Figure 1 (tube, rainbow, N blue to C red):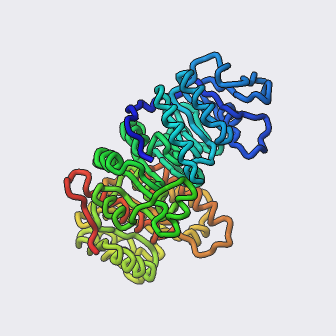
Figure 2 (cartoon, one colour; figure 1 turned 90 degrees about the horizontal axis):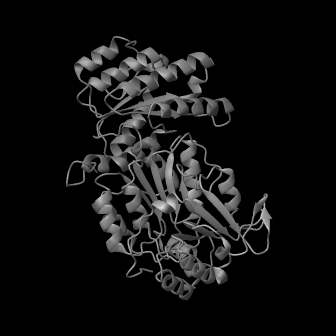
Figure 3 (cartoon, rainbow, N blue to C red; figure 1 turned 45 degrees about the vertical axis):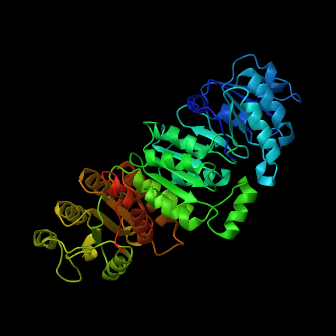
Length: 482
């Protein structure tokens, strides 16, 4: 529901609150409520946290206040866990107390048809300067301030990605998938029904955050399409925005309505508008993480001409079909490039035209890094994909394997063109292959590279991100050939 007359709000104190009150905090961790008080205490929130619940006197040795009115200090953020029937009363106290933000974890609002309650709460909020997050959502995460809803997030310092999720589950999934790929989260918001604060307001704040390089979002509906598109128009020329739309089918729209009270529109119109506004549109959670990893890498492809390095003729042929079908070109390398690569490999069961099949020599890291340098110099190539088989890497002892992966990562980091490694495996029943994959992922992510588990994912990620990359310095979005 769009709300008229809402004041523009600085969201700084939502992400960097000095004091938080958790209304409905409980020492019982099995109540079905998120233990926000315990999470904030355990994960290092830098401010004060006040538990509020008339049924308890203390939690973990800390005094519990019987009501929000009794909290002695000024509070920036209230996290509300009480049932929806008590939400209005809690909000009235928060408004009277001058609380800046109230996050309602609670469900039972417009997603179940209870729009009257939401409208009444908005009227109450407008009596003061209080803004509402949610309801029916997990709330906010900020790596710098320590505010979070997910105690499992582990990363060294704030990352460069901002995430906005209408679903708490998708938000959790993204953060955990991102963490597994070495993608650092800076800020995240699970925003639910958007009773008050909307996705475009959060996106506008993330756009102005210098620490955030990429914005990703899972969206089921937009409350104010004019404001949303105006925000995209302002943001996407500066930062990539990766969007996964939920409810693109009739059945999905019905599910979205029961989930967040969303009213989903025609997907074909949505998709066209996303392209027009330079958004990076994806269709699955995995594609979203894949695209974000590439978009947040140190170097992003700025052209559709691929230089491919691998070992195996059949795989090279299949890759050529895959890339060409996706609109990419695999141009023949210059004679100088081919001659330089040919001088380091046998002339049997190899090819230097592009795709480059290094044959068995492809598992010699000195030959691989030499070929990478030659492709980097070739004017016909925009970016490089290197294909490595985990099954064959498994034949190397640990020290040599690690040295080889480090040499590839170090070489790629120093090249002018983006390098995208793909480490695929055929055997799914060998634990050591996963150990090697995780080792390679750590090395390549440390070098600022995006790494994929198969060629299909790598091609799909580049195809998603490349139009934005091409359009950064142009008023007309770039496109791949069909």
